[in-house]
Image (cartoon, rainbow, N blue to C red):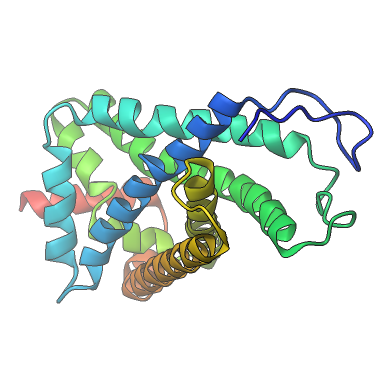
Length: 260
């Protein structure tokens, strides 16, 4: 696949930059490995909340990850930096599109409509991921690094089963999460086909059709799993959210209950 130069004069093209062959391949790769792999891993861990009483299994899994060696370096190097690269380059691609409908008005092919969907689902996923990382990972480390001896426990309790359920009990948070996780999962599912084509794994229409079915099957399955986890948390967190509407106070209460 040769390097594509976006020329002025193409329908809707702004021609801000040349679409680099190498960077586009790396962009496609990073969307599947490690970002896609991490999304699957992350939802698998969240799915522990659906087992039995949910709380024990979920908290055990979260604690095991938290005590893994060099976890902060792994989160930055293997997750956050690839996400940052994928997001920035993706936004550069979106900047070439002529408005919300892309150039689908000029080229109404199914593949082009999927391209437009891929770009805008990516934008929605970026917003969701940024908020989700801040609301969980960043705040967890803020607790750990600023709360002295109690920091580790505060950090854990801020993302524990009951704390997550408390978040999802808020209808606005639940709705935002459902939209965000659906965008991220379907973006990954559709991206599988793009990845297979760009890396030469699917040659021919039949192979591409199989990759498309597999990718969308994965995306839909992950969306359903993420939605099931979210709704389950929302149901289980109603009582805690009514009892203690302030999150900081609720997290401190969890630490105090754990210490007894």
